[in-house]
Image 1 (cartoon, rainbow, N blue to C red):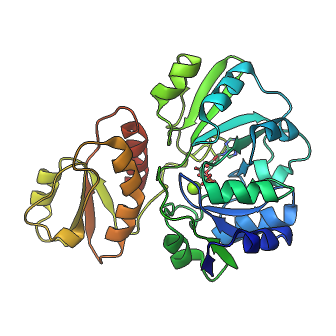
Image 2 (image 1 turned 90 degrees about the vertical axis):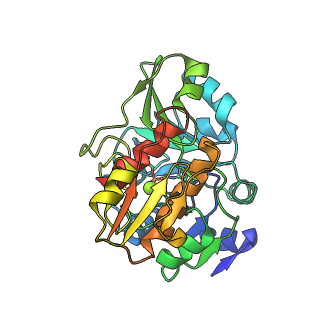
Length: 316
Ligand code: TXA
Ligand code: MG
């Protein structure tokens, strides 16, 4: 069931049931992070391999030290700048966080989502919420309650509807090593440039492929069912004239293609708007019974870097 009633969500979560929750990035599939039983059912519903750890969502910055042992000053500065917001910090976990949440790793991923309904929800619970994106493993992340309903609706009792996600890309994951070496593990809703403005130069290790210890970074991910290829759109259209083809372009419409088969991410070149439209656009085209989706990389700066990361994974 879809609804806007936080009390219903509280009741289900208190009995170890799962609830889909809105965040500013993507919808999450949430359960009590301190309950092995609830967390196990998250992995089961998503069909997610147990080696892929979950993010723990909290309602207030003061809660970080309840679940993490040590917070380096760089992490504190990032938390002050971006929490609540699309930032996830990797920090050494306390034993209260079950190993199943972190897939046995010693670091836990922590984030404060910036969405009023979910912040209210978190502050009414006496435990944090483990929540991966609310999509079947490997598919495109959901950015509306209806996206969640279409795929997981029959497996979970409640979807808390907070409207369409305002960021539309998952959080940026940052780890701090030896107290001073910041590493971006997943490009996301906060641009690398913005992280660097707070902590100085960062290493970006977001391109590893099959190493399950590298966060969320399996090469093929966020993928539609229809094959997606990246390149020069004009050339790809010319080379695939015989096919039923869809287009995801950064800024431009293509005359010979029906509008229903096209997604223009942003008419004005605004990266935020493009990010917000990306996953919903991929889903819309995936429902059009196409042979192929062609797309192009966007300028590799600001949120464009995270958009390109998702496009490359969708094409892999
Ligand atoms: O924006 C987001 O982060 C969304 C919303 C729902 O909060 N969540 C999300 O979760 O994208 P998920 O599970 O789809 O992606 C989280 C990624 C995973 O790929 C995982 O590998 C990485 O975070 N991760 C989680 N815990 C980790 C840990 N302890 N060490 C390294 N990577 C971790
Ligand atoms: Mg995900």
